[in-house]
Amino acid sequence: MAFIHVPAIVDCVNMNMNFHLMPLRCNSKRTFCVSAVNLNNDSTNNNDPLLLSATTSAFLRSQETLRPDPLFVDQYASCLVPQNFHKEKLQDLNPYCLATKFIDDKLLHTVNLIDGVKQVVLLTDGMDTRPYRLQWPASTIIFDISPERIFQIAAEKLEGAGAKVPKGSLFYHIPLESSDIKQNLQLRGYNGSRPSIWAMQGFPMMTLANFEEVLSMLSSLAMEGSFFLGELPTFLSDAETDIKSNTKPWLNKLFMSNGFRVEMINHKGVSESSKEEFGSAHYSNKLFVAEQLRLSDDQTSMMDGFYRDQAFLYDTNFHFILY
Image (cartoon, rainbow, N blue to C red; front, side):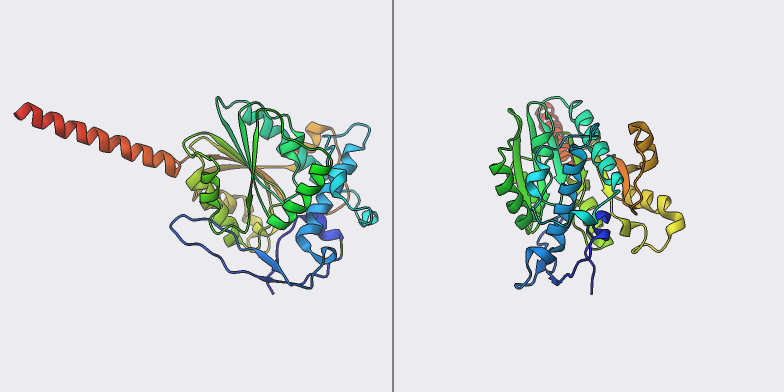
């Protein structure tokens, strides 16, 4: 059986998972799609690993919000958590909240440095509330790539709670199950010749190959100088690589092969800057910030068009001089 990656926070919950895999559906060069998980027809919300993972994350955010001095406030997280959720099994998971705070701050800091239209792409579990709870500047377009069914469950609850994106911003959902995520982004206005910032937290992936597909998509879509940040799942350094002692060089090579210069962020450093201490629960996801060093496909096309125009003008002027 292949194993689906869900955030490490779900390790403390016993799950009886029953699912099979759908094949990749890529139909063109540099088309991007991720292997989707197709739960069997008899599965319920109680044994859906994607829903359980997303709900667990929402519960942790709701608990953080209730603290006297919270790292962040997620006023919508509680509406995503069922009353019968197994809350007693979830304790001491500060690292997830620290990671959430880190990603929040980096997103807002970076997006406020962008002039004009600001493009934000969130790779999420379907219950990410950042489009609603963060104070996005005007002219921000937010794209959420996540499992369709989880997103629709969350969207219904969020609508009931009155959640809305800030005035002057736009929000689009791109189903993870789409046959061509790249095309769907572009159809909704994403422009690879403009700066963007991409963030990943809770995004379901199964294998190293899936993450390589993510990097390949970003490499083609993200303009030079754009940023990709978030949490890397544990399996990227453990289950898939089997080179634990050389994790950092290996990850550097993986990112650089797709045009990204990456910096790995230590949770301990984030904890110290936030004056928070780790909980006792095991948490081995890795924080990272990466910068795109290559031209996007759109930039490359623009450059090709420019040089073609220059060649045409040169050829025209040359003939004009001759005659």
